[in-house]
Amino acid sequence: MNGPAQPASLGDIVEIQSTFATQKEIKSAMIALRLAPSLKQAAEKAAAEDSRTLTSLVQKALKDYLAARGYVVK
Image 1 (cartoon, rainbow, N blue to C red):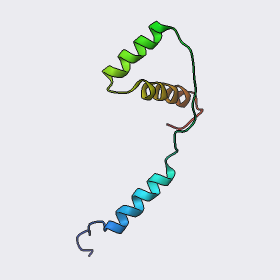
Image 2 (cartoon, one colour):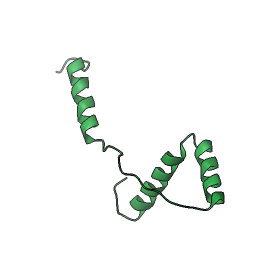
Image 3 (cartoon, rainbow, N blue to C red):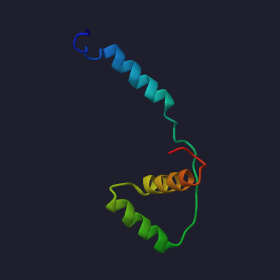
């Protein structure tokens, strides 16, 4: 019979964190776009209500759109 599970060591935690860090893609690509002021205003309001930045809202909306169409994995 196995004994109680041992807690993760600090080395295990560091290894898990470094593995996760290497898998995360760095956000370095930029895009500029023009849109109607009313659309920007609505997006800023939606972002604020969702406790997000405008950039975060646009990234989420684009990722959700692309995932729904099979271009990226969510």
